[in-house]
Image (cartoon, rainbow, N blue to C red; front, top):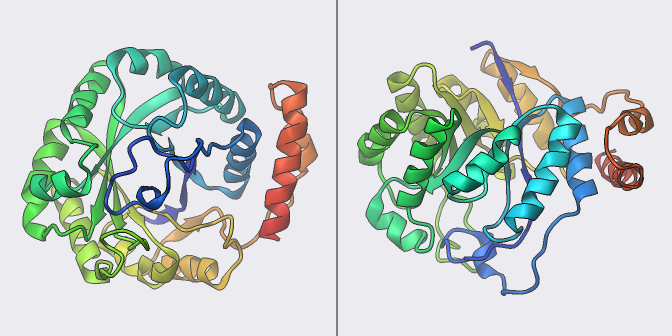
Length: 308
């Protein structure tokens, strides 16, 4: 691997219908009205990703934030803008839902989080593993690809790798997102330490050894950019979780690009320098409603102002 890149997960909400995953910020929030993003905001972010060379990791949001019909409408417009299909990380989808979303979908993401069943029952009581495994079987039948997310540092150990390996093999997992626990205030993990650089790298290196062709993404929080080089050398393909819009051009962004170089990788795209783009022209050529175009341009200008 001689290249690396940043992958942006595009979230459509700050609301979740279950809100009881023990590590999650949303578990600390009240059951207030659904905080969802506008369609123009999502499309504006999609345009930025394309022009900055960021790949789309997946489309995600809290469970129950959108109705199925509303989500289909939004993802359809995003597909028109990007011309590509997306990875969907929106809970365990049924066969009927997957068939309905096939025109816009390349694969599904199962938020497994931890393969240790005892720990999983405690930290994700309303998000069991089995429905995701069932979804993987259905998606494979429909010709889609399967991806999982794993959070390192929830209490598991490297001994749990054997169970992880079984799931990857049985359900033909082609990609794994390895995140490190980010202790959130108000959760049971508030005072816990995040996983060490060495431990996160160990999970990545063992996965690369067992599955040479699998796509591995490493989650990097703002306070852990100095471990990018180590995780890339361990076998990760790409980087995620960095708050790239808010921290574009920051010292942390420069550090990520530096770490990629230290690992012997060419960094595709940019986290530090805005390209010269005629943004009006980019929006005007979109095949979407004219009124929506106007709103997208306003949102795009807001993002660009923040990034500059």
